[in-house]
Length: 421
Image 1 (cartoon, helix red, strand yellow):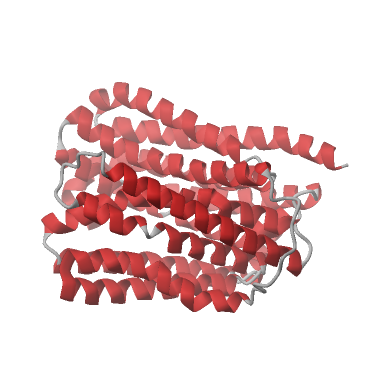
Image 2: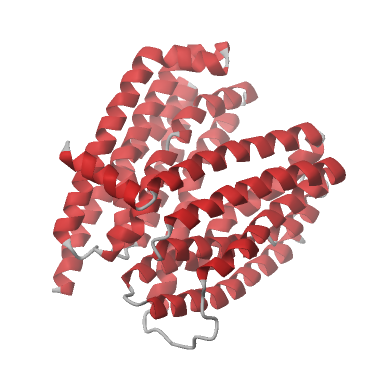
């Protein structure tokens, strides 16, 4: 019990409560912004904007070729403020150029794609420019975390959410779908302009760092690519249900039944986002890392058991609050709840520890392997068991990727420690 008390105390000491509140706040306001758009814009036109934006959303994690990921990991290993300042400037300059190149490629490719919906290319071109401010906001957040200023990191999320709601409401009200598209573009841009001065970066610094080599770029690219593939893991079930069952109602059922389990994944992310810099700074201190792992596992094992007990006894009541027709799929809900405990207890911590020791490419390989298994298993299980088959596949893969991450971390961590001795 002392491990849990100490773990939570350290989490709160790093202003983790601010990150938690900001995350909840951001989710609620994102929902409100989406609701405003739904009410103010005709469904057909809104659908075109959302279709184009979803394409960009998949690309945003690799904005700047993932250099924001390199910044947070390698920056945590630097000792002085001046070095971290120089690394930020390097990532800023190179990342903007890389992001602009990505925008150019997207726009160029849009001319060769025969989009099904009218005006999709127009909105894709506009929304592709979201990549630059999104990258800038990512490195600002990374720098706040490197400075152990989780409070400011949390504030950026709250302010961004407020700007999103306000801009979506007013721009959608006056300019309909084009206003909504510009609201999505302006939100990260305005947030960036408001917070970049708070970093107090010395933009005249010219210090060159040895770590900004090919390995540095490779780490960020694979870390970001891993996030993209992981997103696909959550999307592929929906796509395959629609394709294999040819039943849009089942797509809707699975989407809403999985809403609560997948929404709960924000909890381990809050802890990891708060602590990533702290445990990366001490990644070569084996005693500290092992103690951190034990504390994390104990806390989230208890949380997982609590969630499973609640789900077991009240699954039907929980689903009834969404829609009474969902009650018949309580088994699907329970299978998904069991699956996310695999992420809670294993994938959440060990996936990030792999990144912390510089092995982000392992996460990419694991996610890619899981994606392949997902497609193969779903082709067999969905026609046989319906949406329960999709849930079984996802649940197995959540545990499989978690176990694989843990095994790889312990195997590679010993090698990393040996090299540093």
